[in-house]
Length: 234
Image 1 (spheres, one colour):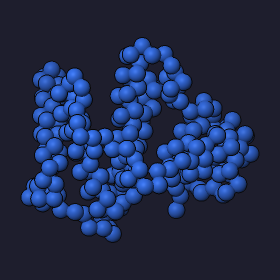
Image 2 (cartoon, rainbow, N blue to C red):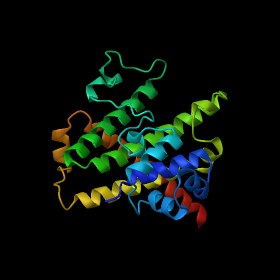
Image 3 (cartoon, helix red, strand yellow):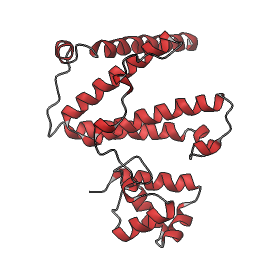
């Protein structure tokens, strides 16, 4: 079975480098057709190619294989070592009650989502969800960074024209597709945790309220936008 994380990373690294498949294949000592197979997860490469690709793109094997988000291969060995802002006694964003409330709604809901996914036991679904949400944060922060007037382009390794053309959004679409596929394939082997109102309220007495708020406000916004669109098209 091929590794979809490897295929996607291999393709994105080439695009990030700004070279064609033909150029990359020549540098890596293989045919363009074989590289295309690797980038589309149609074939699994050998160790020799993995080493060459790591050297060529200056990344670690763990990063190329999707085992870590860090290009140099460093990993968080224990979840407890990762800083958690929610542990702070006075975890309030200074100067904005709205920002604090919005953050808590998102953090609580995302925490609930990943807890459900952990009970489902699908690492692939968890990884796809993390990729999707990470791209969302990346997009919002990059727009904020640009609006601040900071011209330090070296802060981001994705070229500005690719960002403006929607590469992160394309990644979100692919991540969502992989997420759905992972959930569908999980149906055969795993039992989904109960997600009816009573079960969720009992299992998540604190954070479930945040998820309900997001579901309600998002639904109202989407329905309102669609109604307005339909009204203008009549």
